[in-house]
Image (tube, rainbow over all chains, first blue to last red; front, side, top):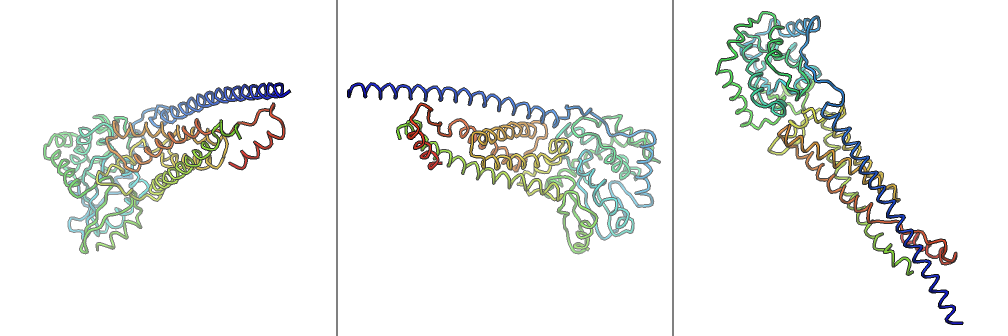
Length: 269
Length: 173
C-alpha cells in the first residue's frame, strides 16, 4: 500500500517536473523572439534617425545663394541696413563710439545667422550703431566651418569678407553670407558661391575684391583673430563682448535679443 | 515551497529591485542632463562647458537637430519613456525599457561618432548622456533577460497547493 502511494507521488513529481521544463522552454523561446524583435525594431528606428540626421532622408543638398528678384530684395535690404553708417575694414560704426561690441563669428555658423535673423543685431545696428553710441568689430573664430569642411575653407571665406572690407563693404558681405547661408556641412562654400555673394553688393569692384583676397595680411588677420579668441577663452560663436567706460561684459545668451544687448550696453556705459 | 526555491524567484525579485533602483537613478540623472540641454536651447543661453569649450560647436552643428527637433528633446523623451516603463511591473515594461535604452544607446553612439570624426569637438553633456545610455542598455538588458515573473504553477498541481503557491508569489512581489 505504502509502495503504491510512493509510486503515485513519484509519478506526480515527474509530471510536475516535465510540465515545469516545458513551461521554461516555451518561455525561453518567447524571450528570444522578443529580444530579436526589440533589436530589429531598435535598429530600424536608429537607421531612420541617422538618415534624417545626415540629411540623406530626402533633403537635397542646397546652397543658400539666392538669385533673381529674391537676391535683389535681400541685397537691397542689406544695403539699407548699413546705408550711411561709417565702416572701415571689419569695423561698423563711428571709430570713436564709446562702446565697442567685439563680435566673434564664423560665416557658416547657423547661430550667427539666427543672431541676424531672429536676434537683436539688426535693431542694434539701426539704433545704437547708427546713433554713434556703439561700434561693432568683427573677429573670425572657426566653429561650424571647422566642424565640416575645415580650416582652409574658413580662411578663404573669412578673407573674402575682409577683402570686401578694403572697399568699406565688409558688413554687406558678412550680412549677405549669413542671410544666404547654405546647409551646414555640405561644402557649399566654393568660389562660385563667394563670387555670387560679391556680385550682389552694390558698389563693390569685383576685380579689386579679387586682388585683395590674395593679400597675405588678410589671412594673417584671420589667424590673429583666432589666436586672440583662444587666448581670452572664446568657445563658440557668436561671442559678443562689450567694452565701454565702465568696463567689459559679455552677452550670456547664444542669440541675444535687442533688450538683452541693451542691458549689457548699460552695464558698460 | 520547493517550486519557489527551485525557480529562484526570491533572489530574482531582489535582483529586479536593485536593477530598478539603479535604472531609476541613471534615468533621473539623464533627465537632468537632457533637460538642461533642452532648457539652454529654448532659452537661447550658453551651455556651461568645460575648458575645451566644444559644447557650443556641437550644439551649433547640423547634428544637434533632427528635422528641426533638438536631439536633447529626443533624449529627454527617451529618459522619460524609460522612467514610465519602470512603473509597468511586467515583461512588457521590462521589454519597453530595454527597447528605448537600446535606441538611445545606438543613436548616442552615432552622435559620438559625428563628434569625433565630423565635428571634431566634444560636448561633455552629450558624452555624459551617451555614457548613461550605455549603462542603461546594459542594466535594462540584464533586467529583461534575467528577471522573470515567477512561472504560474502548472494546471496539474492540486488546486489547493496551486492557490498556496500563487499567494506566496503575490506576497513576494
